[in-house]
Length: 462
Image (cartoon, rainbow, N blue to C red; front, side, top):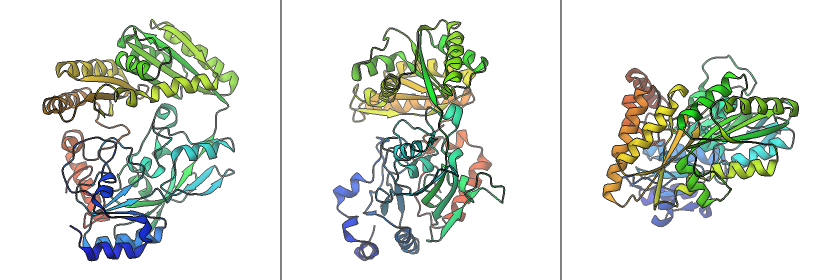
């Protein structure tokens, strides 16, 4: 519980117009998109920081008085990574949203943590460059949040995730010390890569105040191939045949029958609602290469009983199809008062078993589920619609989740590919992370944050 003197001191660090203290306002900034009932104490003060110096002063004071500090971007994460469970301070980064430098010759960009991903993409494209990571909420989510959660997206299959595009990070440690991690050069083999340690740490080790990003040349064009299948097995076989053909697609995404039907109701776009699965395969490169790749993809999936194969190069039509795919979460939210989205990954050879098993478990517990995913990686997102205020439904959800996670474990997978751990997946860390590795993670946390003030009770409990 913060004392009035604590709040008054923090108010003096920055303009009072950038400070919120009412219970109603603090509650809003103590939640995120996880939509989970979380026990604990909401934030007691929200500060809209604008400078690194403000962050340093706040952290010095917070560390001295052992006040919890939670960094917050857009709050779009799905695992409770920035919910407040111990009161304290929320650092809101919406005003640290400047692109500091864009070097098209070196293909780099320096940004503050509150910059929206889409703004990075659009600016890069003005010089024929490309920032590939594309979580489905990239039009509203921030680079700081992407770094915190090590986010990915549909194009991860070919281009990798956020961690592959970070050249350097400037961070503020729990005691207020500012440190630059990484050289900012295309290659760096000098010592430990501490900048990579920060990616996916969910704000538990330090506060990112600046990131230097790697950009790549933007592909000249792309083609989107869509196809329907009468069985999940055929769809999975189609994915394997595409890869064996020698084509390296930018994206291989998937929607199951429930997703197709739900999206069509929410965002009508003439999807085939009678089919069990739909693949969305995007290839990119030079125009002649794209045409050749698209032809190979079409020929590959024909051998897996694909139906209604469509190859699209028109930009508006491609965007229409991708908008439908990205609408899956919002569409599922129409089915019930609440929707909880998960993030699971298994070896691609186990994908059909994973999807079928997930559907079977949800049927067992009378839960509505729509499954989409980045199947080139073996990564799926079961989106479960329910009423969290219905005790029986919530109990069924928790039982189903435990069984689904057991299935993931038995198939050699893990419980997060790109969403992170937050508070939601803490109970399962012992099962999915080697005990010695988990011990070292906790020791690293203690080394960087001995007073445990930075986003406490996330990833694991000390």
